[in-house]
Length: 161
Image (cartoon, rainbow, N blue to C red; front, side, top):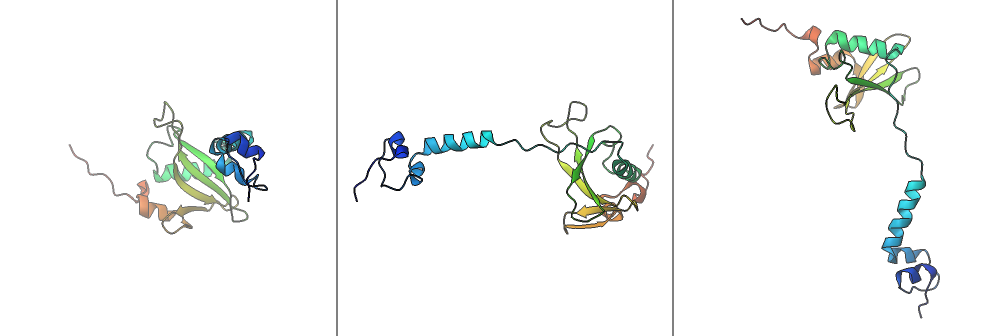
């Protein structure tokens, strides 16, 4: 079958068979990359979620419990933790992920905010569940203390003079 030039193939300097206009882009890698780049640039950027305000009831509840247990060292006290909302799959529950805050005060790369833990809170009862990443299940908050050795469950440090 004789080949003819199609609109796309002419740009690349190649000929293609009639009816292969879509396939011609495969023969034009530069144009395909440029087209894809322009298409992606036109799409709206995905907005990063905003941290939950520190004065929200859910954050105060979780912050107090984490502080009482001594989790995350002094990150909480110094304001070096962020609380982000997460989509909850359970009706009536709020999901919050706790992330490290990176800036000049807290240290770390400001372009990153690694997740520390994920929690599920029931605002009416105050019940807090922790995501055990090993099992993939939300379990009682006390389970985090078995893994991380919360301050309340830690034996006192020996006094050395």
